[in-house]
Length: 158
Image 1 (cartoon, rainbow, N blue to C red):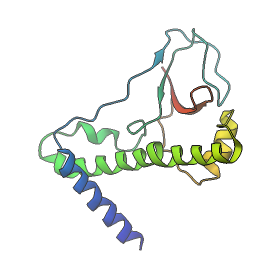
Image 2 (image 1 turned 120 degrees about the horizontal axis):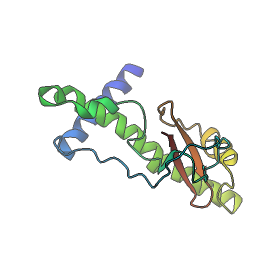
Image 3 (image 1 turned 180 degrees about the vertical axis):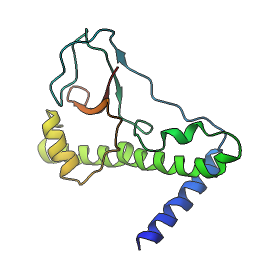
Image 4 (image 1 turned 90 degrees about the vertical axis):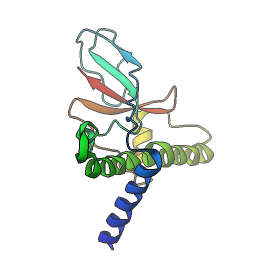
């Protein structure tokens, strides 16, 4: 069964590659804030608001995950193999960030009357309660929920 699902996912990724034209570069998400100096470490789960910290923050979206990053740089005939794999990783991330999390957030809001008010609530009621798997990040990155914007962010230490 697992072999069939993996084969189907690879076929789906190859089809997506053909439909979206393999030669188009994948756009990286823009950095929304960046400071220049190093400060004390932020509290886990809270956005770092220290202007002296050497941290950049961006919205969590397809492309922030660790898996498949090196595949975007492959040139020439190697893209025949790397592009479908890269598309598969991107598709999995897009499914989490653009479909599963928004659906879970809307369900939470319908049930509780508001969005999660903290990172802990987000982790408990959105991620864990819905068995969502966030893409693995680089060692200098972490997920942080921003209750003001109701968005999942990625902080990167520089």
